[in-house]
Structure formats: structure tokens, C-alpha cells
Image (cartoon, rainbow, N blue to C red; front, side, top):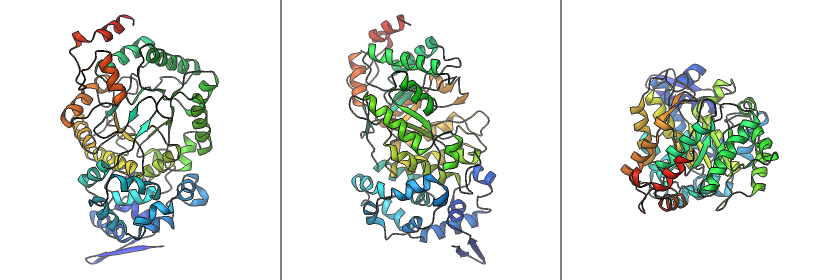
Length: 460
């Protein structure tokens, strides 16, 4: 089916729904590289006008990636909840935007609506929104998950402690863990990106975190961010696995390039659940995503990168994850060229994930060859904090010396907590007080008073 719009003397024709979505997207380098971006601002506006008038149920009739060719499409459409969708079923995309911005769309109604929305619907409405619109709606969405602590509660902000090391040296990783705990971070997860995928190395890292956590009764969860097949092997060997990690994308082809499928993720979730390691909940999956992954794998089917990113969230939703984060600027300027594009993408990703009912975080980051700097990350960090993000990343000095990119630091988390009055996960906050790291308000004590942590340092 073709779609058309006349602006002035020009009639703009779009060959299918996928093209409308691509042409309506804000400008970004990845879509230009793929040849799917609007050729002019006029064409972009024409596509948005077409999109605004489309009925939402059109996305249930015309797939961006064909149903018969793609398991992600099949999971999205086969799992659609028609009853949950019914309150907005008669709306156009433009009318849906207006409703989302109204007081009628409160937290309870958005939570009930989430199973009735498809990723393409939320991607479409995001393309009609300004940054402030994305922030306002996302701030209404609360998604609470649990494993050894409770994440996503109102007024809370969690941080993943990321103690990476270029050679997986246990002492170096332990030092970074201690550094992070001194700053009160680590409630989302203590998560290591391993420098090697060897099973013995992965098991060593898992035991390192778990022994530390058990010795000091830290109410958090651990994860080594290796391939899901390695995690399954580690479980078989009796390693202390809390969360199963995997990078995922928005098409079957990109997931195949990652070496994963829905069946494999089903198996991994079942294996983690069988361990019964959670104390307050059983959300056992951790997913990372990023705009541009499908294009980099030549698996984009001619669709724009933001719509495909939202489809990755449609896949993640199947597994009731504890954590999902978009590693927004990590893939590079070939996909998000500069700070402006990274900021917009981060807000889009958070909005789309939250609207679909996911516990969204963001690795607020950039590579050193992008036209971006730490001031851009400060801006995105602050905007996502206002939007109610569930968690961010904490890296010593904001400089990941293993992955060689720039992220956010332990100090950045302190800044955001202070300026927005955001507290930690309650169980973790109580632990910090018991350990003499923070007071009852969650404010860090002077380092000289942190006796328990100083004693810990002596054991390294």
C-alpha cells in the first residue's frame, strides 16, 4: 500500500509503511548510510503528516519486516494483547500522541496499555514528538523489577557498577568494585564486560563477585556480560549465575548474527529461574541494545534504525527482564553522528522501552571519534534523570579502559541524585547505612568515617 501527502506544489509518495516510518525519523547518520532517510526537511515533514493520520491498528495489518520471514515480527504480532489495546484502538498516531500528553494518560493507564502496543506503534508516535514530549510521557511510566533488590520505584535511581579491566585482572576488578561501593553505586547490578570469553575466566569473575557479595551481604545482583551460550555452560558447571545477559536486536537476522534466537533465550531464562537465586523477585534477564546494530549486521530490511531498536524491546518484553539498557552512542558516529543525535536517540529509546513496559536504563556514552563530548553526556544524563530512567552506568572516571569508550562516572550518579533528589534501591540503601558508607538519608559519609569499607580495602 502506498501513502502520499501534498505540501505546497509537491506531492510526496511513500511506497509502504516502512518507508513512511523511515522518512519521518529525525535525521541521523545511520539512516543516511542505509539510504532510507528523508532527502529533505520537506519530505520528512510530509512523512510525519502521513504518519499522524494513520490509524494505530494499521500497524497490526502491515508489518515492517514480513511475518513469514522474521521471528521477531511473529513474536510481536502473535503476542499482541487486543484487550489491552482496545482503549486506543480507534486513534490515529497523531491522536495517540495527544492522548499520551494528556492527564488522562496516567501511570496506571499506561501500565495497562503496554501489552497492547507494538514496537512500531511506539516508534511511530515518538517520531511526532519533541524531546520534552518524550520526557513527559516516559516520566509517567513506572516499571518495577526485582531480584535481590527492588528497582524502578518512584523517586529512585539505580546504577550498574561496571568494573571492567583490560586483562580481567581480579585485583583490578576488585579495586574498581570497592571504588564504586565507596560512592554508593552498584544497586542495579555489578556487571563485568569480560576481556575474554573463555569459560574458566568467566567462572573466575562470577565467583569473584559472588564471594564478595556473600561475604559482605550486599543486596545486589551480579552479571558477567558474556554470550548467552557461555552463561548456559557456566550454569552447567555450577557457577554462581544471577542474571543472564545478551545483546539483542530488532530482526531475526541481526539476532542470528549475534548467535541467538528466541528458543535459546527461552532456554537460558528457564535455566536461570531454576537456580532460584533471587531473594525478592525472579527477573533474571539483562539485555543490551543499540540503534544501528541491524545496519551494522546488514540485517535491517530497509527499515530505519530507531524503529528496529523499538522492535528489539518487543523481543525483550517476552522475557520479563530485570534490566534493559540502550548503549546509545557505543556503535559510533556512523549511526549517531554527534551529540545532538545521541541525545535524541537516548530519549527515544527510553520513551519507547518504557511505553512497552520495560525497565529501561541507558549507557550514556560516546566513542572518541564521534562529534560529542562529556558536556553532551551531562545533558542527556540530566534529561533522562528527569524522564525517570531506571538505571545508568557507573564507570571509574567515566572512561572504560577495556572497551575504550566514554560513559558516565560514579560522580555523575552522585550529581544526578543530588540535583533530582533520587535515592538508591531501598535494600541497597539500607545496606549502605549498615556498612557506614551513607547515612539514613542516603548521603555518603566522609571517607574517613567509612570504617567498614576501609577494612574491606585492606583485604585486596
